[in-house]
Length: 124
Image (cartoon, rainbow, N blue to C red; front, top):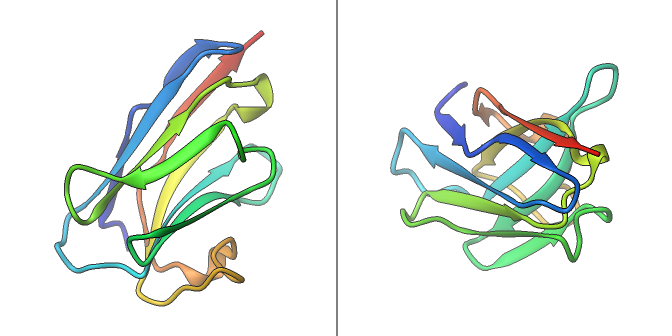
C-alpha cells in the first residue's frame, strides 16, 4: 500500500550531498521506517532503518556516509547522504512496517507500506 511519500532526490556530482525525506499519510506509529534503493536489473536493497524511534542500522556501503533520523513529524524519517558516489545512483524508496527487528529490516517482503520512490543520480 502506498501511504508514504519521498522527496529530496536530485542530481549531484561525486562527493556531493542530498537529504531525503519520507512522510506518512497516516499518524499510526511504525516499528520500522526504512530506506531501500533499486537500480535496473537488481533486487531492491535496504540502505538504512530507524527502529522503534531510537535505533538505526545501515547497509555496509552507507555506513559512515549516510545518517537516518526521525523527521520533523513523529511518523517521518530523513536520510542525510554525504560523500555520494556514482554507485549510489538509484531510485530510493521509503518503506514502513508495524513489525520489525534488527535482523530482518532489510528484507523487502517484511514491508507492506511503500512510497513512490525518488531518483538519486550521482555523476562522476
